[in-house]
Length: 152
Image 1 (cartoon, helix red, strand yellow):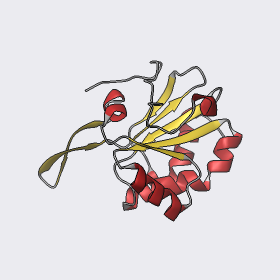
Image 2 (cartoon, rainbow, N blue to C red; image 1 turned 90 degrees about the horizontal axis):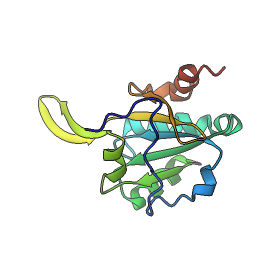
Image 3 (cartoon, one colour; image 1 turned 90 degrees about the vertical axis):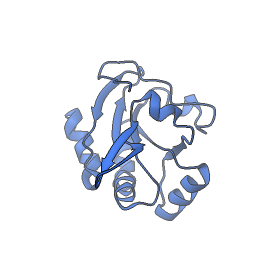
């Protein structure tokens, strides 16, 4: 498993299938959040928290981008159902997930399976990882980000 650290150069997440133009995020800080699955309770709460605070995040110079192994169609349905204003990248091949070290073996109820470790990377304007949040508070994620970055 790849172990990225704060201060590392962020791997390129703008693959050809991302649907995001590099100019859209040029000069902006990026909240790149990885989540397990569209339309599940925790993932919906997290996405809606970021949605509800999106204007404030944009005003502070952030762009929000979510990544999960779901398909583009599932992302489109999830965005429409929850009125999400930010981009969601489908990573069905788990290429980005693996580059960020957030895809791996998990255990729940005695069962082992492969899945996404819910993680948020804050990437600065120069493409450097400023902060990594591994214990995401889905209901209060925006405030958690602000607290981690020392933003009032």
